[in-house]
Image 1: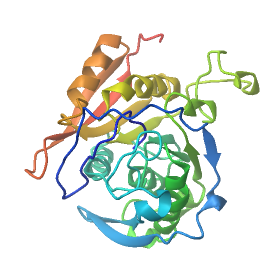
Image 2: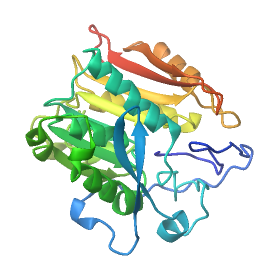
Image 3: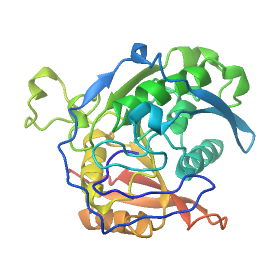
Length: 305
């Protein structure tokens, strides 16, 4: 997950939800965006690996202690300090299942594509994109510590054990995938992403010779829980997604009780903006939580935004 403005607790797979939306934490400036190199993987925090079975596809998920990594209690989201990236959220599993189904139906292909996963945490959707032969997969999370202690070791473990995955038969494509990691707030992280549009207002825009919208596929799960962060997330998507032809897959709960976010509120903003179409890909109502959905967003063909 990536950015929130208040202290509250969300629920991961198999746990309940609690929160106090009235307790606003003072908003602090976000840390500057930065690329986290794969070589910066933590050597002090142990990442325990567990298998996750996704309808016949087995991926590995890392498990680390929030207390050990960031010095905050497990399950807490502390504004501007920790945004939940060490938890495995239900939406990330929904998203992997949904895009896998989309591939089988011929609706999308990752082969040779540039992919960006926003609010990645464990990075399972992005890892799946690697296994499906993406040319580049870039992982983004609010916390650099999440990338160093969880995302990078989790990606390394999954990509070094491709025999456990049924995702791709062509291991050459996996080896050639460009994998990079970026930390930062959604309002600023575009400054260090390689494949984004620059309007000339950014301080680093002069460094880009041919700035373009260049991510074929954007993946994000459980990123729209906070209304206050939705606009910056949406603007980032528009800065990044390729046009024409780029798509964004979004997995989220229909409504996050107590904090106001959810797919209905986010899609209302998208509809009002008028430059993207939204299509429901999957709905999950298993009784373990409120209704979860996966949506596909695409730029309208006549959009100039």
